[in-house]
Length: 426
Image (cartoon, helix red, strand yellow):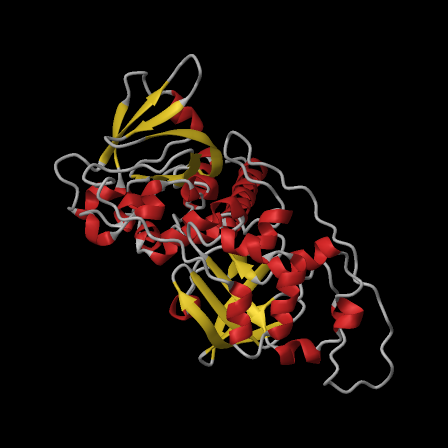
């Protein structure tokens, strides 16, 4: 007696459904917050604070969070950030930053659905076990008339300014107009850190190998600008040695630049954050904005900082220099000597650079540095979409592309099954 085998009958649409379902998975990636914020120079101090504390590492282990980032202007005007002394308060600076991270994902539409009475939302600070009772939460309210979103804490309030970055259901980043202070932070007991008041030019002269750099700072009057920036997150200066200037034919390079561009080149040697040598060697985000970035727009005038063979290298896209020595280091200012003059690719081309101590097969042609050409920076849209100017790769771009390829293959196989079904008459 022949055995009868039952073969279930699947329709082509059912088969297509399973194929699409099997190819639609997109993995959730760890959050690299410094990478996401790297193209926003107005958030450079906040980004640096995330990196120098352990908060950036905490966020790498999370998904579905909302970050309230504080722009440089508000950090510099904040008594909390500028006057905080760890010995005067039971709450560390890292915990203050954790208080700016919600453990839920909120987009603009989500925030506008919050009732006027408010909603209590838990922050990353609550997870540390150091927040007494429920003090690691914030109350968020929405004003239906003005559409203002306000974050309330016992010691401070902050209003959402705009949306900076949105990776749906993973992370949403908003800027706020004030630092949020958790309960237990004794602001009145905070000690004021005295301004260093460093004479940068004199410090370079005392270094005995930076006379040309010192004279250029005095001639450009940019030194006052650097000293004003000692507040907040501090500054890091990369000053070329006298030998670095001697190796470069400055008469053909710098002399042809107008005064404003020469000042930009000097600003290009300064980071708007305090990075001692240890922090510089372990820097999380290699692409760093400079003071020239703040003057010219996001994505421009950046330095690529890396470590190799025990040395710190600085790549401008035109020249690659190395840190030769520490000239001065006292929080909030550090000055490093570098082996070459840092030339920005926005003003120079490789074939227009003439180095005297390198042999040449013929007389180099004299070429004026090209004029700067930078497109205007597009502000982020209200829905969180970012500008397209020198922004970092979109979060999960490679994974999304792979997922799209898999989906395309699935659709193709499904259509083939449908064709086979029609052709055979099943």
